[in-house]
Amino acid sequence: MKENKIDVAILGCTGAVGQKLVSLLGDHPLFNIRELVASDRSAGQRYSDRVVWKEPARIPEGVGDIVIRRLSDKLESRLLFSGLDAAVAGEAESDYASRGHIVVSNSRNHRMDTYVPLVIPEINASHLDIVKMQDTYGKSGGFIVTNPNCSTIVLALAIYPVFAGFGLEKVMAVTMQAISGGGYPGVPSMDILGNVIPYIGGEEEKIERELSKIFGACGNDGILPADFAVSATCNRVPVRNGHTVCISFSTKKKAGREGLLDAMEHCYPDLGLYSSPDKVLEYNNCDDRPQPLMDLQAGHGMTVTAGRLRPCNILDWKMTAFGHNTVRGAAGAAVLNAELLVRKGFLK
Image (cartoon, rainbow, N blue to C red; front, side, top):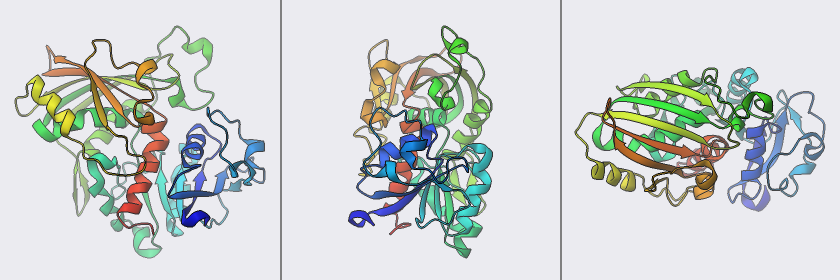
């Protein structure tokens, strides 16, 4: 183990999320990349020879020489970061958990499982305790933890202060999602340039189900979903990175603008985790913010930016939120969850 760090493996290491995980974990103070796992066609090759590297920084030192392993191989690392494609993630992650591994997953397959927590550390860190109810926890010590869909994370971090302070009755969300959300190479250029595609398969359903689970309460039967209605409409737009969400909402308690802004300013505690941003949610008072070009790197990609809070003629209020889909919405979210697992004593 390098410098007493925790050895980890990255599943789906050649894909877009896998590459972002490699980039974020390359010099992490807690974790050391020991193993890389991908499909059979990549197995047996050095990572640098196989991967079509798309990250702006170079492959971290030493990682390029790691020989890629198969999903069926026995792994030495207990902690696994999963960026697997949904076509294989469900079975593979369950198998690894049964063998005693802790799987921190970005894949959608297990997000709505009864005893699998859907974690955003600043919102529902206590949900981690339900992993002890997973069958594999008692048998092998393994379990699965997931992070939400990339758009759900942006929406959740923007609207949770309202939920915590005033309650929610209805939420309507319209997303404008970057092409990187579909993985590499994404949408063909002739389909997306100068265009908006008003459909992303399964995305609306994910947002509508996941938000209620994230804001729900733990119980013996898993998580009791929060009791507000959610309606989502999702669009793919010609932006490389960053998802924008236009949100309208009604509250259970009467809320004024200053009260809402105060809730956004003071809701989130400083978790003190390595990947925690200085500000989880930052409100920008400019009339034309947030914007992908100007707000993508806020908090090194871990801060969600909100703006344009104003009255709504149908619901009570509306605003716009924005976040980095591959960092806060995917790989960075998984890394933050793993840091929380260490903090809470699940990994030693």
